[in-house]
Image (cartoon, rainbow, N blue to C red; front, side, top):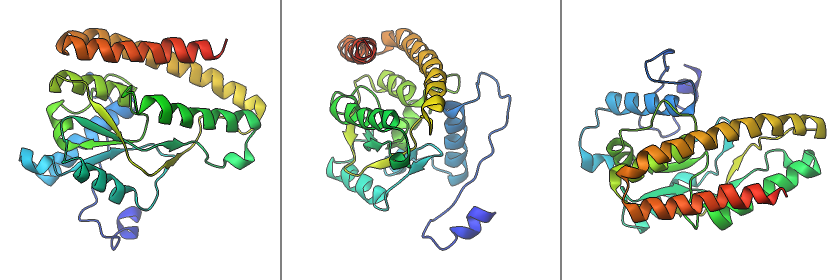
Length: 247
């Protein structure tokens, strides 16, 4: 109610809130299941049934600690129209800058945040490896891919693999030319930083394992060249570049 009142005159056509019930079959708690449920409920409430309408609707998923620039929607729309509405071939990604209160954090945290931004700009986006946390896509693509698998946790990479299977091609990641500020998964002190890295290492290890498992299952539904080329760069980036970077 508070948010509805606050944004009543902000120019939105409609504000929809969904409450994801707990314990639905074949789901695990997490962003995948939340996004899947929210998208399905929004499509149902908006009564969107025409595929031509869906290609004109862009969906953006984000985290609770995301801070969008005021021109994000304009930049996304411009990019989508400039590229002739590639509804079923492209996912859109803004560069993520991990500098939420970065000036007050430790040197290690600042370096890590800058390094992650550089890797996104230099590898993840240009080599179409995967989106990260905050990304946009057409509703047509989500609908064709049966939305988001609710049984996994890494929604960004799971979506990419899932949608490559239904579109029968390797999806392109197009950069939106405006940055989004994202809170770093880091601690405010060195001690908390070490604890946070241990927590994130466990989370990312589980996530990487589930992504690899999902890819192996879905690879047979993706054209061989697309599956091999994506799998190759994915393993090089995560299995070689990132793992060897700590040596």
